[in-house]
Image 1 (cartoon, rainbow, N blue to C red):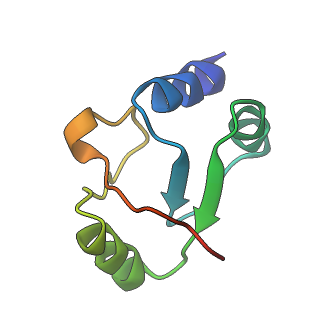
Image 2 (cartoon, rainbow, N blue to C red; image 1 turned 90 degrees about the vertical axis):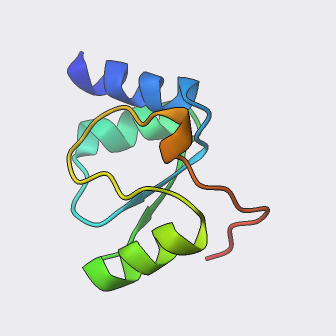
Length: 79
């Protein structure tokens, strides 16, 4: 239940893409898929911080629902 509330909170904050630096549990991936979130995993801490700066986002070190001012912005995501 905690995972669904967390993912639902992320979606309600306005995010449509999550960039993670670590592993993501299967249950979280299930709910991210259910709510239509794109998930990218970047194992390099350095690259994750560079991406956050590029997008004017704040890297959140612990699992929590982001505030609106934590979110970054980009027009297009390509992998």
